[in-house]
Structure formats: C-alpha cells, structure tokens
Image (cartoon, rainbow, N blue to C red; front, top):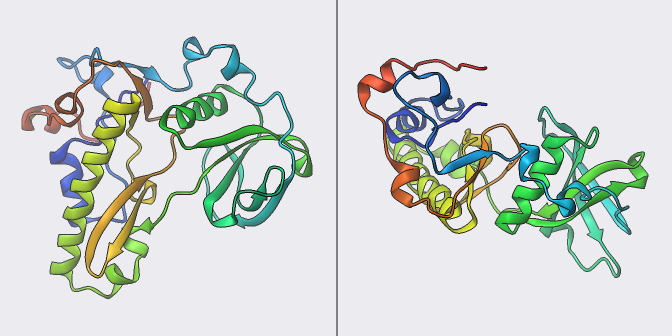
Length: 249
C-alpha cells in the first residue's frame, strides 16, 4: 500500500512555485527506511476491511430519473465516463449546475471506497446503476465550484510575479482545506495534483479552494485522534532527498 505525503510543504511549494501544471511528486512512506506509516492513517479507502453492509450495497439499486447532461473530458483509471446532469430524482429537484456523475466500468473496491469516502465528507448525493448507460455503476455527487488555477483567466493573464503569489495562496488554502477535512471528516485527500484543486478567484486573489476526486489511490481513512499538526508536519530535508521519485509496491 502506498502512503503519500504530498501535502508536505517542502515538496509541494517547489511544484506550485516552479511548475504548477505538473502534479506533485509522490512519496512512499512504506519504502523510506526510517519512516513508518503514521499510526493515524488507517488505510486507503478501497481497503475492503472498512466496508460495512451499506457500503457493499452502494450499487445494488438503479438510479431513477437521471437526466444526463454533457459528457465531460475527465480521465481516471477507474472511470468509464463523467457527466454533468440536467437533473436527478423525482421532480428533477437538483439543478445541473449542482451535480456531477461519475460512471465506473464495474463494481469493485475502488468504486465502493470512493462512494464511502464521498459520503464521509458530505459530497455524495446517491449511488447506484444507470440504465441508460448499460446499468453501469455510478455515483452522483455535489459539484464543487471553481476550476484549476492554471485554467483561470486571471492566472493566464497575470505576470509571473503575480502568478507566484496566486500559487502560494492556492498552496496555503489547499493545506488548510486538506487538514480541515482530515480532522473533521477523517478522510485524508492526498492526490493533490493541480487538476484536483479547484479555486475561485476574486480578481487576482485566490478566494477559496475545493478538493475533488476522493477515489483511490492516495485517499485514506484516518483516525479520530488525528490533528492538523499530524497532517501538515514537514519532513526533514535529508529525508526528502533520500526519497525522490515515485515508488510503487
């Protein structure tokens, strides 16, 4: 199992300042010698030992009255497709701007784990199968506001000195949001490449950030004893130098 610490300031700051469009480097704590998996990290969200009966039945029913919108250009190793929705449920009570639907190729631990994680953080609306898509499993979730920083018009039009300020603002808000979710919802969002961090702007200032994509890998359930200091503690420079590059088990 990979345990990732992309929130570490000395790694992410480098990427946000020098190459924002590139995803941050992954660090594997299991393979770093002196460091062990922190006790407060319980495991990745697709670990079936976390699943209760409700989780295992997440895709057992058909989603009724799903009105598909646009198919979105979103990838992902577990995805079949991602759609905006024109409505869902009786009376189509949700507006299209408030929903997004992720469709999986099949029911597996990754799909169940993502549904469970989204439910834990309060973003899950419903899960089930979609008849119009060959009864494929899907999750309907609340659509988060914003877009990746490098896609905003403000960032594209700004001088480099202003872009650097925007990146630093994004980094600070991201760290705070990750640690807040971890300590209040007990889910650690650690897949923090720029496409998964949506920003809302106020002129040239980053007003807020939202986290998206709670699927595995790099999303973890954490213990209720976790603190913000646990989540944001940086590694020592010699530890960082000895762990460069992505490693996989």
